[in-house]
Image (cartoon, rainbow, N blue to C red; front, side):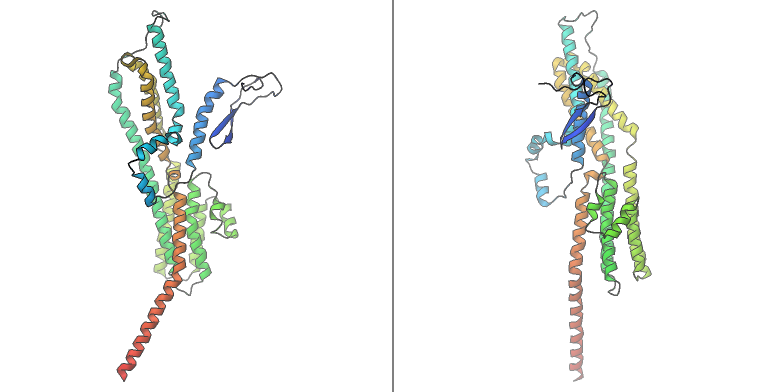
Length: 393
């Protein structure tokens, strides 16, 4: 039973409706809803395949990444990892995103093989239709260039990933140090202001995470950290991480701090400004687009001509050969594109949660440690007094 739709008086762009998490249903728009039925167009189906693959990939990009534990590392270096990775290939977002280009290029190789077979068997006149074959020398000359291009493209993406990871480590470390400084202030300072200040410090990495990852819900992430009045101020701000920094700075001005200690805390705040600048630079400035376009065009043209180059030596083996080559090289290029935007690949949510747990743990034991130190000092004073009395006797 085939699906039918009313005939189209004017074709418009297909719209795609998300039916489930990993399934897209193409729906063609029509201006007349009451007419004779007509089937889906081929163009609509051809658009459905890459849109489905992109939908799966984007949904997987938004999945939270956990921090590794010793058990995760043990599984990561297990000798069974190769079999596990092979069996889970169809769930890989990298491999799913390769379906449109690899399928298209393999199909094209099949058409070239079918055409050359038809010409060779005289199903088509040789005088009009020549056999498509060529010397492999151009491929032997350009193969090193393609390899270097892929390596440099992936290396440039990985350097951005490392830079993003480093700046986030500085932000997390700076937030933890600043929270410890606030906890160790003199007892005469207002405890409620210090608690609010610590909450602002814990809120900054969350606000920065929501700033660099599209689709984040900052209200849900900060509902247990900020009061409703602070939340309303934050939501009205156009640049929320800088709004959090302003809340931290204004709270520090209220406290009675020595000049040296205030300067030290401001240096930690400067780490926050540096983190915002580096993150915005990474998000706003991708690898030069000409580099990405050149890599993509080189790969496509390489594999479009590959069946012609290999036909004389491989015949119908050009189809699996094109599939293997396209799957391998496009996979390397796809990894470079994915890690070019590093923040969805970092466990930013887990890093923020770990920071919050560490700060709350320090706060829970802070007063206990302080009371224990005061008790030791009191015992020491009493001993000194008792020793003085004995010496006087």
